[in-house]
Length: 425
Image 1 (cartoon, rainbow, N blue to C red):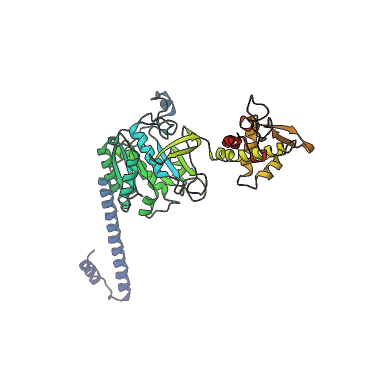
Image 2: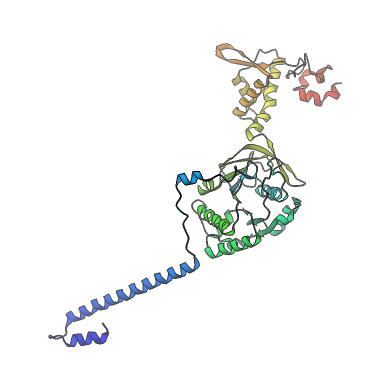
């Protein structure tokens, strides 16, 4: 009803217009404003639905398929790997690395192995090499990125079709924005990318103002959507471990999202300490092994031996030295606790000492005999009469290096004898 209608209606009332009519008019005006505002809100919502439908085409859900139908379908092929034992085909890999452990060097070794179809870390065969690799780096400056990749001496450079340096421009990789993600998907699709490496995730989170502890999953889901839209079957995301512990820092999605998790850790906090690599996940289980590094080529190689093995090997000479000294003094053997007490004053952990002793027993270098009060006494099985260190099979009496007379106190072990043999002779 218009204002004119209201006037006409008021004029036809039989009684005189008064205060009650004013309240009535206020109520009617309020209701009219509410009705108009509600109409505007509905109009805005409908307009938004129209625009969203234009920008987001409808998603067709997959057809209904029963378990019987699924199991009746033939398997396409046995499990295939891009990198043997490490990266299944069509997989997502998360490379988690400790701070300054060398993740970029490991990444560049991966790029070289994939491009040149060479064994990754000199151990793991590249079975299905990608043809068009894209690397997105969010941390290195252009000069360092160029120099470190050049030092890898990649032969098949044509396989790396795009190297994107985003330091200072990470906001351009706003994957949770549909329009921006679509632009990147178009770029990757036009390049024919079939393997995407993102190194690393943290700057992306920071540029979007996201919390690493709660919002990491949003970016990983967006990364999946990017790969799907671009037709990229596989990829690798690099992320930092926390300063404490040995898992990807932040959101628990960093652990359950990838098909395979690769871990790169240092032996200790010393920047020059040894690096170790391991991997686990779906059809992936590679035990921890040490990485050797060639500073001239920046190439890495995986060799057997975990941090535990390294600590055991480091403790073994000191354990044998204690037993050798005891043998020279005519002792009948030392208990495990006595050996631990004698060696533990150094830099070795109790577990490393125990494992070194167990390894020596398995190798037949140390024998065990019953001791007092149910103890076990350890002594070298076949000691050298000069240095007290164990003799190898077939040797008797003393080491060849110990044949010439010398002060036995200067010969703490057979290797030292060997090192100083010319002086002894």
